[in-house]
Amino acid sequence: MNEDAVQRLYELKGRGAEQPSALVAAGVDQLLDCVPELRGADELLLRRLLPGPLTLVLRNPARRLVWLSGRHPETIGVRVPDLRGAGA
Image (cartoon, rainbow, N blue to C red):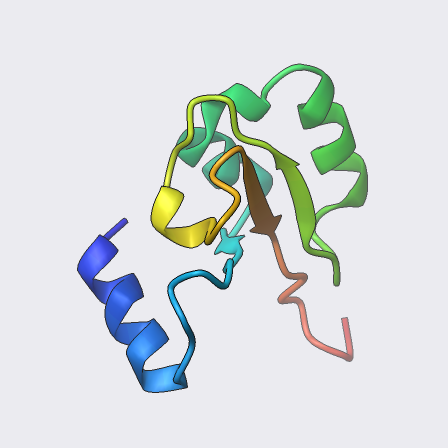
């Protein structure tokens, strides 16, 4: 994850650094590799709800990827979109 790229994206979108953004992953396993603290009880929830159209806001005790968290470094928004397409 490249913090400079995230900052550039915020600039392009005209978004303030205090606004949170979600971590978007291609799959639940990739998400868990990025934020391993989500394994366990949160993992069950993730696997039940994702991939899908949701952004989940979960605890972030290790405060990973804080540049995505805005004013709330104790939480992290995560998404795993369903990319199969409308006809799948």
